[in-house]
Figure 1: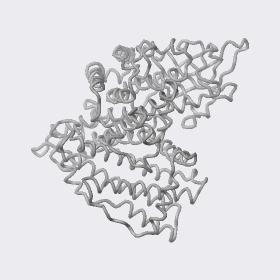
Figure 2: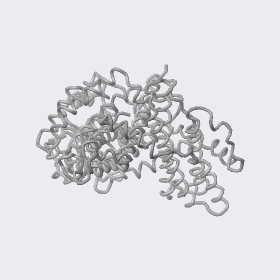
Figure 3: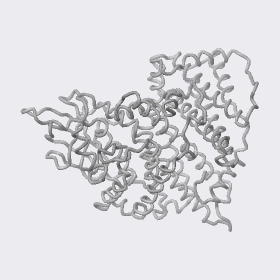
Figure 4: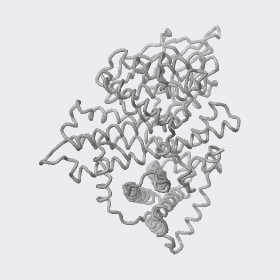
Length: 595
């Protein structure tokens, strides 16, 4: 019953108006013994089988990726989300994230694996008929077959429903005939199964299963990409490509349900993958900083380098808890839906949809943490950062695609606010009541009572005020512009940045509180992490809020709202230099990420 109670505690998006407690979220300190064992197994596979081959993978040595994916399949790493009856392990959402995190350390190979187990396999798992599941899933779980996902077209990227690929019934009514072109298709060069989106008679957006070798299916040359060079990326062409009638996937005209629901799942998984890549790169940066001597001392002794190391560690710490918090929310809601009588597919898809806002937050934050870490890694390596031998250039190139995958970060920022406002309009999230309270508070004398009660009182107050800052800015924009707000993307992006920081602030506060309340780790470095992140997040919220307010308000209204924003973004002074040095000292002494 615990899972159901937790699932009912906060709905998707409610974090912005309601408080959570440490026991309501999952943190990396909460891994079960089985999850620790799965992590070790995945880590061993990465260390022994994949990492030694990265140069060969980068050159796309024929058959190598397929061979490695087969080995991953033998270990059960490709079928964690799939029920045993179809050859999978049916592990929980958190375990799936753990595997994604470990695989995320491998760059190009991670792209191939995650595409296979995510967008390649899940459409069949969640929307396939029983016959389709029995036919394809066992081979996909074992790694005998590889999967690909054909959605993007030259004229349809973020606008997926603008696809031009068509499907028509054959004259005898026994087949579908596909015509069209797809691009940027991961795993296309070696895939055995393609999930293809097309419009029936040019109108009804629908998904189909197409097997490799089907007459009329041809591939373009391998794309010459900026990064993820070791992954196969090709165009896929369909010219009078005839497939069996039973190869339609899901309901006719409902392809958008497959495309968008699978993206929700892919977004939080991408956060986990980015976490793994960032952790691997961070460890490389720490190792080099400890070993590289200048002026007779290791560069790790320099304050400028310690600042970089500490900031990377802080962001990793926050991304860890935010990702696994989101994963457990999905897990708990999935369990609740199963208990309510929903089937396997409906439960996970419904849970991912419930927390679609959080999934977008994780996708954006995770990809941008990864980008920050790989960039600073090059900088710490200096001239050696341009040497392929260090792996720094590869990590730098590979990271860039993460801000484009699963919907660009711009699209996800816009979606997070759009979804929140839609939930408010439908009554699922009550933004009106706290919004009205803030309007009254702006006209009142600030109440500073109780500011110094408890170890985390300053952070608890700051978090409450950060939520008020978001509601002040976003609520004002909605009242001012109403339906026109959708055309003011700059303001929406400001609001999204505030929303992301609020979610992360709450996540890191709850993690640190849990660490101290349960006596998991007795180390003040976690207080340093908390305070530096809160200090910087409140500053970012202030800037984003000002940019938004100054974009739609003016005169006395603007002056009052700016005063309110200033009040809501105050935080106690923090010696960030000393705090960052303490954080850097801990990880540099360990020689790796150890928070």
